[in-house]
Image (cartoon, rainbow, N blue to C red):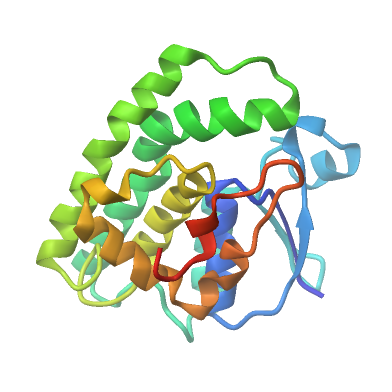
Amino acid sequence: MRTLYHHPIHPASRVARVMLAEKGLPFESVVEKPWERRTDFLKMNPAGEVPVLVEEDGTVVAGGLAVIEYLEEAYPDTPLLPREVAARAEVRRVADWFLHKFEREVGENLVGEKLIKRLSGQGHPFAPAIRAGLANITYHLDYIAFLSERRPWLAGTTFTLADIAAAAQLSCLDYIDNVPWDRSPDAKDWYARIKSRPSFRAILADNITGCPPPRHYADLDF
């Protein structure tokens, strides 16, 4: 069985899970706690980072970007990138915005400080980082609203990797109830469409022991 080593509250891992579901690829889900630095896991990925995909033939694909690109190239029948070169570049630009810029400015400051530190026993949350994350998220919600007002989906006319990347980040924040949805109805409407996709059901079912999500997290109508 194809196996994905991941952590539930890790954006790139969530991207991989949604991509696998969108492409109709069955897989076994194995939760990995990267901070434990298990020897067997480090043999698959010396960087010690999730996600790691192990194919049925034993092929190991390690790291978020590698897994994302591999899935798109190895299983092109359900494409998550458009065919046109310029359109593909725009999808990659928007996906990069959320996988890197959003992660630095929001995810690390909120999910990292408020949840990951708690799960990994890395100390107390750093209040200035949390304040920065809460301030920064409004800017990113405004950007989602800006894009969704002008396009059916974030990077163009079809659902793509860009939407998956943004939704993966926001879903992690929504798990800790840190998305001010009422501030951005357009972003909320876009995310509601993502939540209704069958590929997102496993994400909405995540429930970490001792750290449950808010009630609205899995509610398709918020």
